[in-house]
Length: 431
Image 1: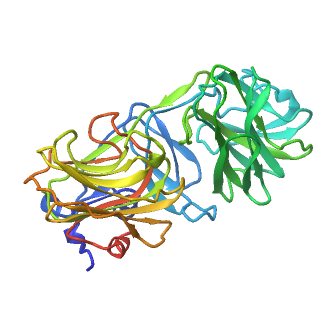
Image 2: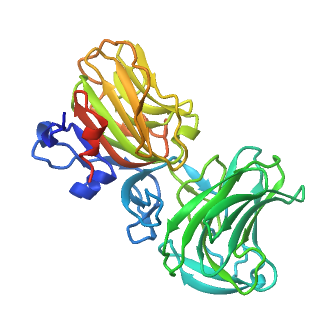
Image 3: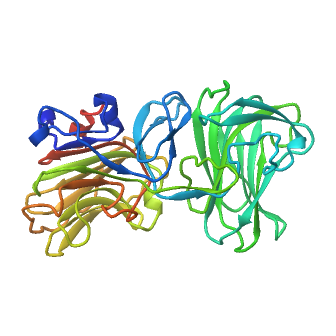
């Protein structure tokens, strides 16, 4: 069974932006002729997104972020998503300014021949570093929390063979962890200490013509010990150089989009998005295609989407619960039932979720990772459906109360269609 465009109850995300030029599209009820739906988006302050031009741009307050990603790993931006994130703070100062100073927040500029270059972050200046003595730019940044902390670097190559990023315990006089990027292979490995490294190529050709990588490490240090970040643009090699664009330190177990700082730490605030949806509880299928960027790694039960209100109001939701994606339905009597996946995606995986709601109130969630075979969670038991949801809104990335159950996702598509629809039916709708 194919999905006729006029039957679609709701369509939003990067795919809608590409096809229709609007964040969302509804084709039933008052919008049967295909006019767009007005979204309610909120975020205090600015936030950055990757443009099709390969540069990070600032999105103004209360403006959503159309974020381009390289979905197949070939270094070319090919997929438009909607970037939604929870609150985060970059602890580093002058995070995108590795210039020769003043100010001298990043110490030891005299160890390098430093030349200004075009930054991957619009409005900033990147700096090429050729080693001329010592090997590191260093910043002292508070103390370790004892919990997971994540640091990453955005760097563009000129002719370096390696670049290193190291986290140092100045109190204990030892390196906690270090990440090593080998340019010839793109391999990102643990250089020293204990931690989990991550990263990937952002662009084959950056703003200065070289390959651009984002890479880093997640680790934990001794609570209260002084924390240093060491950036080694070219390792221990002389007469070669690399271009430093941005460095970020977050007190969290995974990284998020760039937060540009000046002489003080900066917080990017949580984002909330909701749109009107007037369909009643009935047999339907909810499809979401997203890039996994952390929702399954946090414990606040972040939403992919939710129809209806919070609390004991009638609602259906897909959320990341206890590390796995789960579909849950609740009625106004406070009863609920759910279907949970037992396989968790890895960070940066492309995830497709297909949740079916049957007329008897039972739900079942299905999942495909990186365009692989679809697996299914066990179908739930039946549940008496209400005549209306507890509110005529569809919430994306949170539950409808500002700051509650906020996740991290790069959303390519969110589609709601009547009846039971297959994965191939939804894929056929995408650009």
